[in-house]
Image (tube, rainbow, N blue to C red; front, top):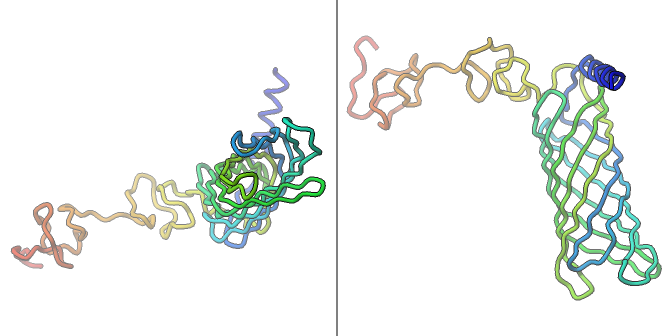
Length: 257
């Protein structure tokens, strides 16, 4: 137990010491994974099996990537005497990267997919829509662990038609090419609640209220949408419609303004 604790502490120290990197536009993700597929109980009678696959992704921004993956699983129909059936699912997804920590992002993806089933003398393809929920955990400068759960809804084009679901679990490693050294775009260096990629005022002092751009939020005492330094009527009643000067139709500008 003590050796295991020391080993885990060493791994954590290596990860913590790795310099921060940014997933900017143009970053490419290449990876391989193992996949376990649970086949639908309605429409298909195939044994649940494990397989393997690969993915390639391109970051359109720090928060959005376009991703293609494919895999192969060897299975069979346990109800009848049939040869091995090779199952090939292919997915094209838009994947949103949701930053939780500097080195961890949640993933949500959706897009078109196809299921291809091959056996001796037969080749069948069904089309549908696939969804993904998962996490990317960076282990080193440009190496990450990917854990994903998938759900594919397909139209069964033969065997009586209808539709069915295939569910999957995927785990593997990815290499992120084109990562830039420095603060990650999905991190929040100044701790103001606005991630680096959107922060127009980096380095905001701790505890300062900021707007959606990460810049110091200026006071608006009467909450009319016009900040105090520009408000010529600073005591407008709640709910009143005001002009660009912060004054309602029946209000008089403050003396000296």
